[in-house]
Length: 136
Image (cartoon, rainbow, N blue to C red):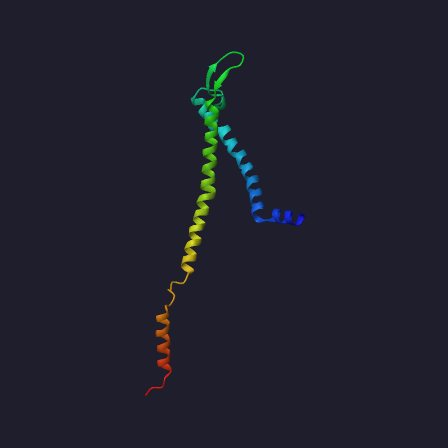
């Protein structure tokens, strides 16, 4: 039982996944800082709000106000677009480039000759036999 667990943990894909989760959480902190520190204040300034996340429409005031908080949605969309852009440009584009380069190298290394047909082989054997026979 422990042997199977050890094999599962030491598989490459489990370790790769763990590294991806750690780096992803660290990257999320960077994106959150960028959005909260730069983008949200600029957008909040445009809409004359204290911060973007508090921007919204007051539907009902009183003791328990109801606010349509569209600023939260805008903030989440900005974070999503930034994360998607970084993943695309930092991971997908380089991986696609490496795949193209690798495929091109494999195509160049592959033999360009087509395999000989049975007829071609028989012609070569005939020619070799003619060369080996003594001249008359």
